[in-house]
Length: 226
Image (tube, rainbow, N blue to C red; front, top):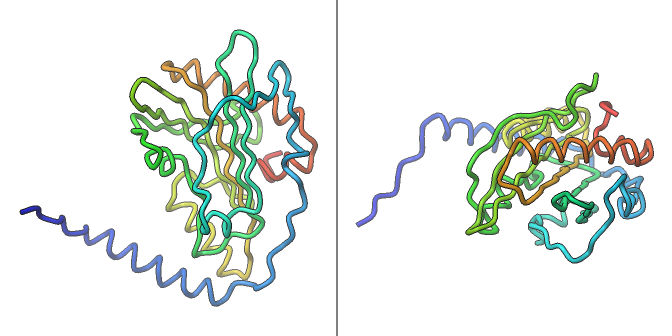
């Protein structure tokens, strides 16, 4: 007979508080969502420096169900190839208005849902050395003989939460002040067993991406850190 573990008291208290606050924020939030002001398909070029778009490479995608349709106004999925380098897989999921009942689908949730194991996770910067750094996460995901290094960040308004809890709290804080901030998840990954080499490649790709796109698209990806 299996025994179901009892939830930790701290988790129960935190969960109850979040639910209560979410209900309050839901009651207070504005009913009109801001309009999306950018077309990601047009804003993100098919050629980025030495990389070009390649439609033949499959990606691990966020859930495409009804909840995702409520969270995201646009989801861009692209794979880019360059000579002598592993292909870079890019996902940008953008929502014009975030509320307390919803949250961006972070890779540490969608990769396990696709059959991957998360082997390691660490805090990094998406563009190191810049005055306006972007707090990001690098995780290693494995499935059978495939290893992916995944660099990602989330932006909620002008904040860059680095955990699901911080993301939820940032949304709640904004909702309680009468705001429904826009939110974006930017995820880049390569198939590579070397996390350090993959991180360096992905950071260079981020730098090329942000230099190439226009200011409106850059603001959507990195907000005030543009």
